[in-house]
Length: 74
Image 1: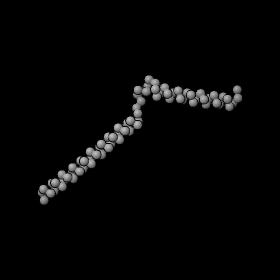
Image 2: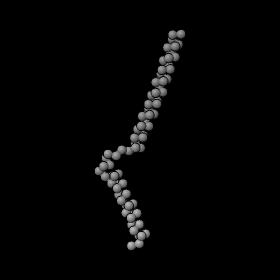
Image 3: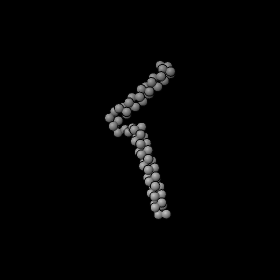
Image 4: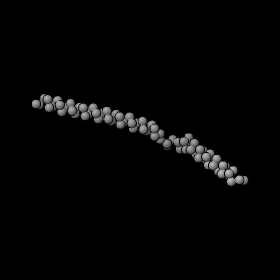
């Protein structure tokens, strides 16, 4: 066989091997243990947004309490 033919067969078998292993990893028995980083990102983003909204409300409540206490006492 020529060198080019051997090289093409090697590259093709490597490509099919990597593709097969990737599919086995994604859909095989171990796929139940995989996590979805995009889903995690959405949950974390939602938690951060919720936390920032709660934090803003708490800051406004503190300012309102301070203003109310200041206006009542003076």
